[in-house]
Length: 118
Image 1: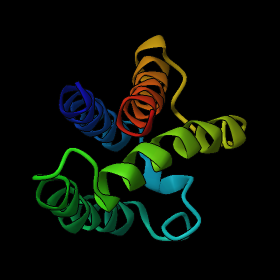
Image 2: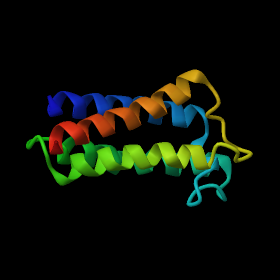
Image 3: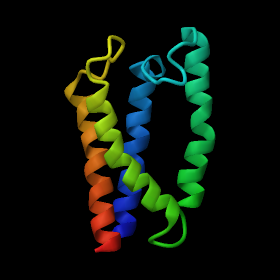
């Protein structure tokens, strides 16, 4: 069961990241917010190549490993970060679909942790 939850978590996270590009998330992140839009977009997109590689490759194999636990934990923290930045002037995560993906990712991370460690 934890394998299914992890892969659902990855799917929800990747869907959120697609939405994040559409919603210009680099404009609210401290490490990219100061960059001009064309540069910030490219840095944000290209930074996801090693991150997605780690999630896919590092999360493969054992049903419980540090990459899976790390992504699950981050997904819960990630909900808090979006709540914290919800009033940022450049925040565009203002739709039911965007929040649905954010909350789904956090919920799946929590469910994975319960299944994997419970």
